Image (tube, rainbow over all chains, first blue to last red; front, side, top):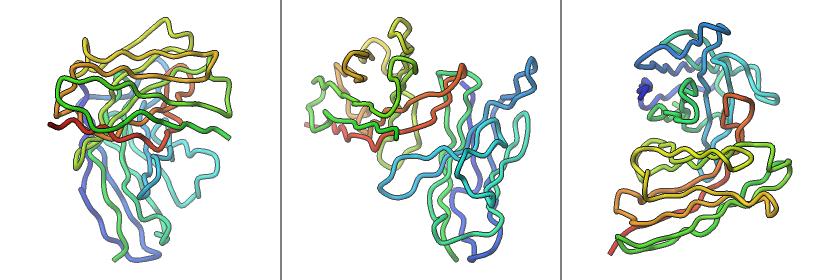
Length: 114
Length: 119
């Protein structure tokens, strides 16, 4: 199994400041034949189902604000919120789909307002 | 609008059975693979099972292989998860998810239904 490890487990950031969540995979999720990273980021707000934010490590879903960005390749990835808004309070988790459908997920990072 | 509505959760004794359902709407159900994912209290997400759009291909996590069966009825736009020989460690919120693309990216999730295995 590919183990996904996120850091930190929780993060408190002031409104308007940058928030960065890291995700590390135990082996590369970069598929050499198409040069794509099989890595997604999701947002889960209390009482709501997970929402897909970013696929292919850096492709934002339609309707996702551009303050959300994904970066990284191979085994190291990051989700950055450039200017934190109150509505961004949620748990964020990464997921690899390199071994689809045997997906594995990061443990989640709880993002709060400082 | 895509909608996924899970049902069938509840309290069951160890060794018991439950069947979860996921009613889908807002898309052509038979065109998409579907998956079940669970989250135990205080734990992370765990993929449970997946099924192709036709239903011909099924996949299971090792933790549930031989005990759980995924199926679908494309005429009813409904996904199922038959859970037998339930254990305390199966206690979790079970969510169904719609996939997208050849890589079966989990593009849309339901709210989930809670399964509690306890005597």
